[in-house]
Structure formats: structure tokens, C-alpha cells
Length: 322
Image (tube, rainbow, N blue to C red; front, side, top):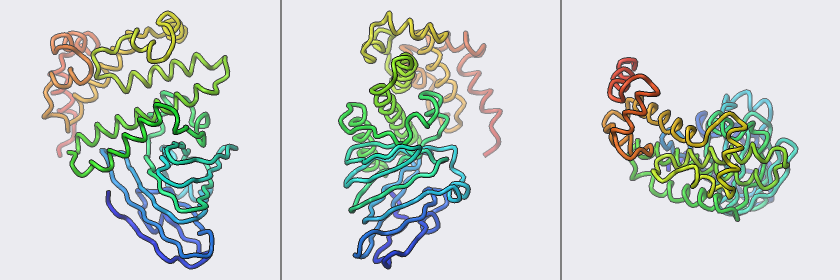
């Protein structure tokens, strides 16, 4: 990760703006005040993993406030941030929710809303910047889960935290394409963690909606697995296949059709990506869960009226010259 700033021995009660001290592309602008009588030390590091910004912060005791004025300055209202607590504890307050997050917990922060963070003792965290639309299209408005503690004890949380810990240790060894794929997988794991946490306290009338959202998040995270079937999806959600089919049908969907639709849409996106030109069509087909290229080509042409190769050439012609 790239070191952005190290701050030591900040005078007592001095206010400093992390946004100005670090980078206009990296962090939320915030007003920070150190706590206690001792000197303050803090380190911020950041890495761009295939378009996903990851920041690792190590701070002494301090309080930070993101105000409406800060929000207007930073222009990141289209993003959410997932904070993974690595060590120490922190208190946060947003959208009338106040909570304490401990090591291994994940907390989602809505960057369009004011927030306060209190660190009573030295702490370290990873902050992952996520496109708002990617999360809200699957899980609904951010107000449902912003400032909601996603407990370290949940299986999906453990997987997501472990993944990002490993990702930042290996990021120097990854090619740009691999880094982009890995960070996308990481975001899918975060989506699954949020969905699992929401399901724990969802009122009964909303249970079906949340279960379908969880199922869709699971599909996104496992599209490349040829074994992904409606039966496996129902098993992963902990309900019968019949019940899951009913919930999808109530929303005008069929489970199998949804899985194939998402596979084809992801394949089309990869065929349109100029950075993916070295990847063969067969590899794209396999990576999207198709058993063979012939099956992929047939289904792709049924949906897009073009073969995968013709679709890729047409997309390349639409790209501006590099």
C-alpha cells in the first residue's frame, strides 16, 4: 500500500483536516481532534485495487466529524465505505444509530450523511470505498444498513475480513486485471455480510425481500461456479427450493432465469472491456459458469442477437482510440 501521510506529535487540541493533509481522491474530508494529553501519531496508507480504493489507517485517540460542509466538498456521495476494524475499538453515530465496533466487525458508512467517529485508544482499520449503486441495487437504500454493526461472529463477516486482510498483503504481486477481479470478489463478500446481518433483525413482512436480496448477492459471488443451481442456492439460504421459488415468483423472477441472465450480463461486460481483449472467449465463458464455449455462444446469441466474437468486435469499435 502506498504511504500517504504520517503525523506525529500533533499539539494538544489542534484541529487538522485529514482530507487536506492526505489526498482529495482518498478520504472523506473530516474535522479531527486528538484526545488525551499525550502526543498524537497516525499513519494513513492507500491502494487502488482495480478501481476500488482501500485505505489502512492507524491512529491514536481522536474524534472525527464529517459535517454537511465536508460532504459538499468531497463529492463522494455516490459511494459508501465499509470499515473493517483490525484492532482497537471505535464508536460511531450516523442516521440515529450509535454503536461500538470491535476487532473483526464491519461497519458501513453512508458518505452522503454526517457521521461522528470516536477512537478512545489507538486503533487500526481498513476502509473500502464501494460504489453506492452496486450495493443499493442488491440490498436497497443505504439507510437500512449504514451504521449497522456487522458482527465479527457471522460466518460471512469472517470470510470478508480474512479476504481483505490477505488481499492487501498480496496486492503488490497482482496484475491490474487480477487486482480488479479480486477487489470485485471482495465487494461481493461485503454484500453477503451486509445481507446476512440485515436478515437477523428484519421484520417478518420484509423477510422475503431480504431473503431474495441475499440470494441475489450469493449469485453474484458464485457466478463462476458451474455447480450453482436453484437447489444449491436454496440450500445456501437455508430455505426449501419451493419456498425460494415462490419468493422469486412473487417478484416476477425465476431463479434459474436470473442466474443465466446475470451470467450473460457479466460475460457481455467482460467482452466489452478493452482491458480484457487478451482473455479468450472460452475463458470468459468458463469464468461466468458455462460448461463449454458452444453452450455459452448459443445462449449469448439468443439474448444479444450476436455471437460473442461479433459482440466483442462491435464493442471494440465503439471504444475511443487509446
